[in-house]
Image 1 (cartoon, rainbow over the protein chains, first blue to last red):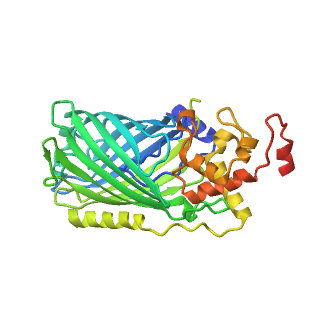
Image 2 (spheres, rainbow over the protein chains, first blue to last red):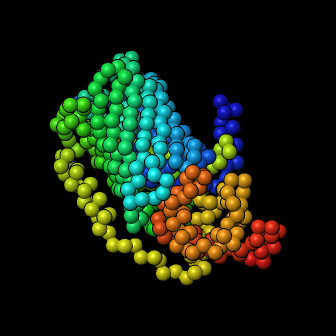
Length: 280
Length: 125
């Protein structure tokens, strides 16, 4: 353990200065890719306030995001969770790739996202809401839900635009459980802006340019041959990001359920650090 | 809050974005802009282009006449687009104001011919 910690410290300490200027979003993807050769390490805890008698939970994912090149970013997620006083569970992994489809900046920039996930029914990260996901999915005790295997393929069409300092992004999601379930659909959309557009001349951590504020909305759109809003759940989530000049970013976003099928709240935190030029 | 109210709130924020007045460039003196650009360069660019922008293993020097002779607007556009197939990332994630500050900084660098021994840099300091 000590050795692993030491290696991590050396990596972090030896890394050159890099500031990623992260967006505040947790759910919505934009067309901004990881810089080529850079590795971003991110921890995203989620505190869940469910309803219907389900117990509060804390889930977390460790994300390793690597810029393969200027138009291709890969990311590995390792998920875990703890519900109430139950013991902590490892709930699976996900591997995604994002491909920027146009090589120059346009009014709307499309990105194709492809993911494979091997998780259990106890996974509580809720990185997306699809199909007819509702608060009732969380009623099953984690100790039982962990035996349900979910091997899923997910595709997203990411559309993103920058205008006058604002970013507007929308994601259309299609997810297919390989056990034969129908394709489920979902969406995520976000809008964000830094507090200040120009940088100040002096080094600073608390100046407005380092903060971004955003708003996300995401939810399910039904499934194959049943595309509809009835029976789906939706969330709205203000979000804030604080980008420190040393490459560390803190993010915070409380998601609030907006209809009767949603959970009450999912409170998300994020800490990330970018190591530039790894493996190059 | 129901779904329609949530959607309305989101739509209002998105519309606010679309109809926001054009951002005005900050009225700062040139040296402030150059210092701000230098700070941004250290944060975002120095890991590839070198701390003095003299180039590194992965990216060229920015003191070359080719860069220094490029019109400012073209440099801003290049930062916006990047050159994704050659490893230069797009910096459209930075607001346009910051890309201009980066260009002000780059144009403040003294041009050095490719075979220069760095004397130009020393002159600058």
